[in-house]
Structures are given as structure tokens and as C-alpha cells.
Image (cartoon, rainbow, N blue to C red; front, top):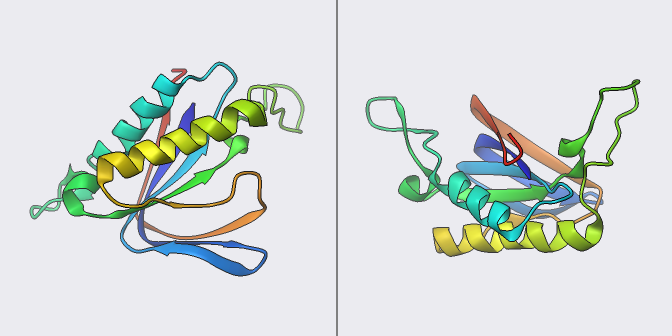
Amino acid sequence: MKIVIQRAAEASLSIGGELRCAIGRGLVVLVGVAVGDTEDDARRLAAKAVNLRVFDDEAGVMNLSLLQTGGEMLAVSQFTLLASTRKGNRPSYVEAAPHSLAVPLYELFCAECERLMGRPVATGVFGADMQVGLVNDGPVTIVIDTGS
């Protein structure tokens, strides 16, 4: 499982030109599920995401988590995070989990984040063609992979 965490001043997600959700200050988390990922992977990465200290404290040091700041989260499924570009110029997605595994693990990741945060997580629609608008604050972007 791989997640890309981006600290956001604000973010939104639209499908077919219609706004589905928007957040203020918080995190945009892109979630990629790989073949062989488990529920434990989803729970571990959810805990990591909400507890990752990427927000500035009063001294301007990244020392506060999403939980500590009360920020919001937008979680977006993104199988392209599992792209392999080892051969040729066309990415291969053979490492991406099939729909039957990816959907439940993405949903578990989101539910676990909600449980830990005590508030809803904004989400996209699995498999939809989505447009994500993001003001990356910092910019701060962190990649976390359970496979490495």
C-alpha cells in the first residue's frame, strides 16, 4: 500500500464538473492499494497519516499532527501510484490490486482515519474520473509505502 500525503491550505474534488467535496486546512491523501496488501497495512497507514507531524507549531517547526491541529482530510483512491515504469514508456499497473481487494482496503483506510480523527473524511468515488484541486501548503509532500 502506498500513500502520498500533501499538506493543503485547501482542496476540492469534482466529478464530471460537479463539486463533490472540499476541505480547508488539512491533508490530501492519495491512496494506492497493491496486490498483497492487508487490513493491517490500511490501519497502519491510517494511523501514520493522522499522526504524521507535518504542521507548524508556534515556533514554525513541523511538529504537529492532523489530530493536534483539528485539520481536515481528503482521501482519494489512486491506483496509478502503483505504476511501474521499469520497461518502456507506458506504465504498467500489474502491481495495483484488483477492484475486489482495493475497494475494501481503501474504504477501511478512510473509516480508520475517521475513527481516529473523530470526524468525517472527505472522499472521492473509487474508479471515477476525478479532478482534484489543491493548494499544497509549503509545499509539503510525503510518500509512505508499506512495501519499503
